[in-house]
Image 1 (tube, rainbow, N blue to C red):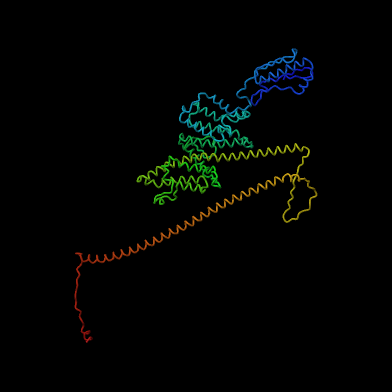
Image 2 (cartoon, rainbow, N blue to C red):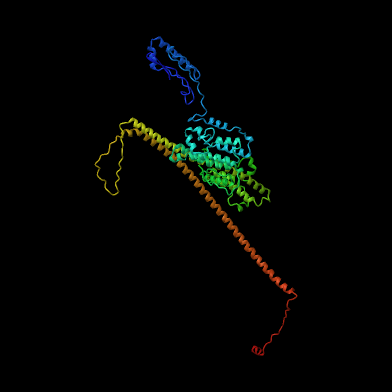
Length: 607
């Protein structure tokens, strides 16, 4: 800055608004500096005309520069007398470039600049079928809470050089092929960059694979930002695989020989039916084993797991499906239904079990809902050709089972993503809290060292442990340092009382909650015992009735057999005699009549 010496003071020339003194944050020009106190005192003390004229001229020039504001093209007039050197005219201010080195660019500006690199972007109506499906997949991916376009928590939309210019060189050394969401979308809409669905999906996976590779070193040493981006990229890579195989399933091919990704975050995958089946199994293992978080008070709102169960139940009760669903709502079964079906199930029964809190995991309610339609298909499979009702129930079961599986697929994707997202958010929050705690400790330590620069004492604690059964030894010959802790006790008394009060309130709340839980458990156990007693009594009555009926039938059968046996024996005797007499080939019966002769000896004896 130029100055003009006049008399006993130094007069400053007004500060010109150039690119060098422009505000780096907003690009605004600084206002001219007002004269300091020494200059004002010198102005008051000066009596010469030349000094007065120079002060007036300088003040007029400063006021003109201030009134001109942010116009950089104006020049400054001469200052002081004619003998003083004139001030050079200011050069016009250069316009700021779009991307200055080591300066981050706003995300919307970066996105616009990337789209300008790909002219000839086509509209959605001009795309082919597979390209439209890829756009739909990308839009659904960008709706993820971590990378939503409204308020993204993590930046994957633009190249690293725009948002993080300070790591541009190190990033280019590690990553050979950079990729971002906006570039992939622009290449897809421009055309001639991708020929298949798999090529586009590979570029999407490359975004998160690059982030994992670049942040691997920082994750190993525990750097917070690198750890966060590493874990988030790992989850998003897995989520993008699930989403692509679900949204783009119409473009999958059947290739048993291609490699299959069983689980985890793979850098790339084939768009095959086998990979989709493995992805579905992976999501089922995550979701179906998730416990349902139950509310203690029925008047409270559903937890997020209960909301998912409620959505699953309501997905089967749309007005358009009333005709198909009317067979499966209530427990109205045919007379011979229990002979074919071991475990009958209906929608109202599932709803009642859900309201009573009998489901422990998400897999339990899914199993019961699937059982409704599998039972209907099993019972009506053989008789659907003989009865119109069976045929209608069979077709309705097929229709509703497909709708149930579609709702389950949607639930699997959202719930599996939320479970993984909550785990990573919990780890990130714990890491941030730990970093904040360490920072507070460092600040407290620095503040204490600043307040006590010469009174730094190192306190050591010596703990003497005596073995069991041995007498305590005599006091040692050295003295422990004495610390005055009365002030600390007085200062911590309020904290102790406050802590005790909060602990007492927590205990009261815990006791009340335990009382409610015990009451609920007692009522539940009593109901179960009552139901068990009623079931046993009913079973005893039914068994006794069946026993009496069986005995009656047995006695009746015995009497019937006895009567039939007697009748058959009589008929058989009569038939035998008549048959023998009517037989023409029977042998003749010879009857001989002989007179009984009496011997003389017996006769004489009798006389």
